[in-house]
Every structure is written in C-alpha cells, then in structure tokens.
Length: 218
Image (cartoon, rainbow, N blue to C red):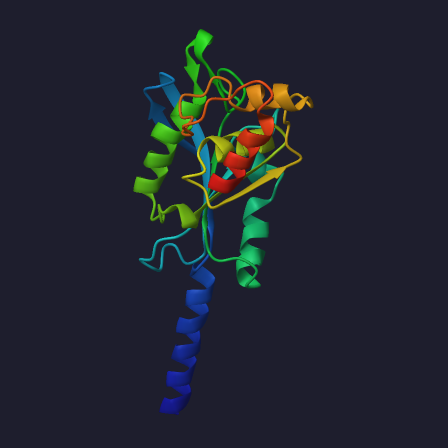
C-alpha cells in the first residue's frame, strides 16, 4: 500500500511540474526612453522553463509590420503557440522573444534626425540594454537573432546591415526594402544612421565593393 501511495505522490509531483512549466507572454510592458522622450511599449515571450530554471536564454527580436504594434505578433502571429510547439517538438531551443512597438510617434524603425526622432538609437542604446539586463538573456552575438515582417522585415535588414556585430542571424520576411535601383538602395539602407560601423566611404559606382565588404563582415 505504501508503494502505491509513493507512486501516486510521484505522479502528482511530475504532473504538477508539467502543468506549471508553461510559457508566458506579457504584451503591455513599458520602459522609459530618454532618447525618444516618452514611454515605449513592448511585448515579451518567456519560454516554458523560465520560472523553474536559473539558466539564461538566446533572444529573438521580432519586429512587427506597418499598421501593427508590439501586440501584433501576439494577437495575429500566435507567437506563443508557434514558439511553444517549436520548442516542444525540438525544432528550436527555448528562447526569449522581444517584440517592440514601432507604431507610436513616428512609424518605423529608422532615425529621422530632422524631426528629432531617433528610433534606431533607442533600439540599440536603450531597448536592448533594458531587456537584456531585466531578463536572463545571453548577450553574446551568437545567441542573438532578429526577424520581422514587411516594415519589420525592412527594419530587420537595416539593423543587420548596420550592426552585424550584434546579430548572428537575421530573417527579413517579405521586407519593405525601398528602392529597386541598386545605388538608391544603398543610400536608403544607410540613411540617417549614426551607428554605421564600417570604415568605408561609399563612392558612386563602387556598389560591388561595398556589398562585398558587407557580406564578408556579416
């Protein structure tokens, strides 16, 4: 009889662990931005074992498209369901997913200096340090990825090209990439950027050299 009680208790403990080890999504978080002089919203996905472990996790920055905000991937993209299933099936490692808002104030992920709107500076200098210190995130480049859809895909492409030192992977999904003319495209990619970290002066007609340098360093 005692063996039966012990087995029952063990099953209860195991089932309780499975029950309570659930992922969480917080979709109305805020942080103060000195750069943008306002409160900024963001959402975050925490993997199932976040509360039951002390480990640190890789991070994915997931950017929404035009017309959405930081809740877009939560409400319409089903980020919790997809991430949970991917982790459960062994298709991806447990990770933290950060979804910032780029639909308040000026829309988009770029700097607009003539309007004193420096969103890209906010992203790199405030948002990333904030979430990577608040949550148990592995802050090395090899554990950091970025992705986004449409406008967010364009932001993904720009950020990956501007800061290849920060991201090991980038997945721009149906990105809004601006001009189709190659020379105009290069100008568009590097416009209004204060974090351009290549010691390279772009000269009209030297597009191939610039692209080769970007590819080699990224």
